[in-house]
Image (cartoon, rainbow over all chains, first blue to last red; front, side, top):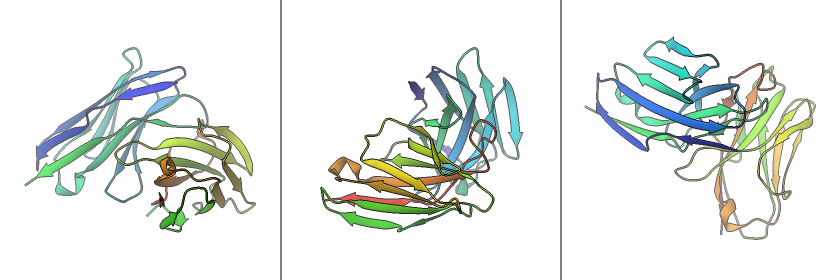
Length: 109
Length: 115
């Protein structure tokens, strides 16, 4: 099976930087993904790491260390619209994603 | 907007009833997956369909079943509804099976309440 650990809540002010950590245990591993979900909305793909290192997409970056079973999502220059839930998800095989419980990010003015 | 549409958006059923949820995939996508998301939790994988065949299944009982049609739209059927089936049901489509294309496109879901 799979288990993922991520913080339940993070609060920060506009313009700040937030790092959401994710540690995982899995019997198989293709890669680590991150999704954003606003209240009542669809989860939206943010990033995917299959290999160790940092992937940068605009204000968001994602990092993976396979040897440490660890990754993080970095949100820079926080904006009010970034208030949402963020999920890390591992791909243990070629057909499913296993999601963490999610981190609620609250951005304050 | 992902191009994945689900219907209905909300549904109320009573225990023991049956329900069918529908999903239209994004154009050009041949793979659809269904997830159940309980309040305050991450989505849980139910099953995946690839070119009209079930390609993988999560830890859900047989009363959860599905179909994928030639146009790649899909249905999720749940029989003998239980109170714990109350959740947001999400459909996700992708260009191919997950191993070759990591990006899933989710619909906004169907909120099912079982009374």
